[in-house]
Structure formats: structure tokens, C-alpha cells
Length: 346
Image (cartoon, rainbow, N blue to C red; front, side, top):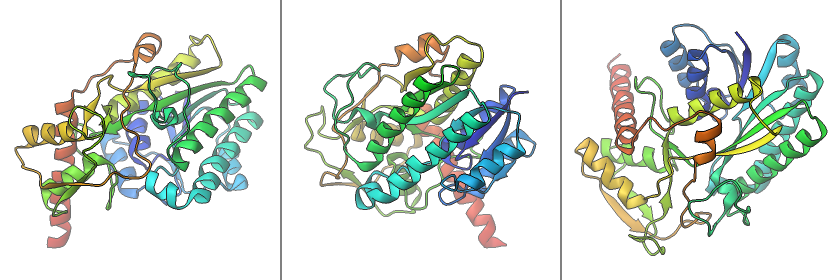
């Protein structure tokens, strides 16, 4: 079994990706300093897999502590790098925090990849690198517009760092995966998106439906879209997770024609905020209490993917529909409520 290091492995996408990697025959170790990740996610991963997964509680901005992981694991063959801060509003309020964390951690990892001759690297990027693109559906050849937030700029910078590093190291293979909007939960509802005060739309929807929130806000209904709300491309987290497994296999099997390639990971369908709300209401049978508020700083008007490249080259496909995205997210929220009730009874 080839050993893969997953950074941010106790986070939302990292946790689901660990499950997919192990189920596809990889050995996985995780690093997560738990500043944003959760031991609950880690416990859920182990419950699904039925075996332990080693996690190092290390801040990747510390070069020495980061290198210690590689010294202890000389058989790592690939790195999947998720560990980054990802809140758009927080990045607007605290840009230096985002530059220091998201850039320093990446540079330290690439330094270790160079030192320990690790040749396969998957970088967690974002459709936010496209900014307010005029090309829809957007494909990987679209120019990168001025980013709408410091978070988005860290992803643009991160991609550039990876590309520069790859140019100087012809045996190093980096795959840049630009996610659109990951949603949903593992079909078992054992793991899902853990946010007490979420900014992402789907957990806001499920928390409103279950009563954690009295109401939710739609940020703007005056955009130039079909119903005035922002358009996004929602994709199930397990489809995103599987793309990381496929990206590693792509370079491990030598199928890549370049040592730095970029792929969009989206469903290919644009869905408005209001359409997503209505889809949830249909699947769950719950009526959502929402209000229309002002636009939110840092939000792009609309973006959705052309995913033809990932489908063709990575042998990857979308398995989950919008209804299944909403269903797994809702069952996860209900499962968390049941768990909380058990704890309070004890």
C-alpha cells in the first residue's frame, strides 16, 4: 500500500478524502493541528473504516515540526494538501493571518517534498481563483481575474508557487484541483460538515431547518441572475474526495502529460441560492424560514464549471445528484441532533 500524507485530515473535505483513499487501497496518515479541524471528524473516519488513522497534531507553519513527520515516515509517496484557512469574510477582515497560514504551510510542505523526494502532490485550490469571470461555464483555460477576497488570492498564489516549483523539478508532479462548492455528507451520515457557526450555505440551511437558527439570510436578490440570487456549482463532498484519489492515481500511473496540471471539480450545473433552498425543502419536507439581506462582501455573482477535462483525463465522474447532496446533508444534521440528545441525557 502506498502511503499518502493528507494535511487538514480532520477537516470537512480532508476527512472524506481519507475515507475514499483508504477504500481505494492507500495507506493514509493525517496532519491537522485541530485549530479548524475536529477530533470528532477523526473518530468518524475511523468508525467508517473500522481501523485507526494516525493524525499528527502539527501546525504546518512550523518548519521543524512539519519535517519531523517526514523523518518519521520516509515511505510517504504523495501529499494531498488541504490544510488552509478558508473563510472569505474572515480573510477580508484579517488578510495577514490568511497569507501567513496558507502560504507558509504550503512552502514548508514543498520544501519537505524536495528534501525527501516526494514526487506526487495534490493542491486544494478553489473556483474563487477565477474571480468574477465572464466565461461560463468556466474551464481551466479561463484567465484568472482579480480575486474577490484575500482567501481567493492565497489560492492564486498557492497555485503559482506549485507551478514555479514544478518548473524547477521535472520529476515532481503537482495536480491543482479547483473546487466549486462541496456540500453533503458521507452516505452513512457518520461524518459531514462540522461548523458551529457556518458560513457555507448548506449547513446554514440544515441548521435553520432543525431549529439551531431561527432564520437564515440570503445575501442579495438583486444580482443579474435568473432569480436575483448568486449562482454556484454545488458538488457532493464524496465526488470531490474521489477526485483526489483519481488525481493521485493519474500521476502515480504516469498518465499525466505535464508535471503541473489543473482540473475543475464541479457538477457543471449552476444553481441559485434560492433554487438550492427550494431543493432542500423538497427533499426534507421542511419549510425554511429565510429573509433577503444585502449583498455580502467578497461574493462573486455567478460561477459554475466546465468539468470535461477532469472527466476525460482523471476517469472521474459525478455520482451524486443535487437531491442526494441535500438528503445526505439533512441526515447528517439530524444525526448530530440525535448524538447531542444522547449526550445531554447522560
